[in-house]
Length: 90
Image (cartoon, rainbow, N blue to C red):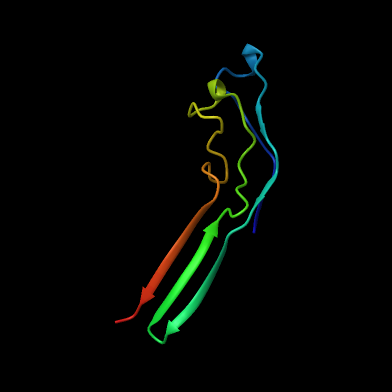
């Protein structure tokens, strides 16, 4: 588990133009994986990153640096991802 505290970022137009700073709320993300040894030389792993699909606080896309509804904040922008991995020793 990873906890990211609140974050305040400037906006594209800036506060001089009357646009408030972007404020991101604190969020917690969790990664989890399980590995099973099939044989002495083979392992199978299943897991996920950001398994609860936590996303940053939505912002005005016209005011972010990248033109998306989130800036490049501490954690990923795409939500959850899952994977499988086969490990074999020859």
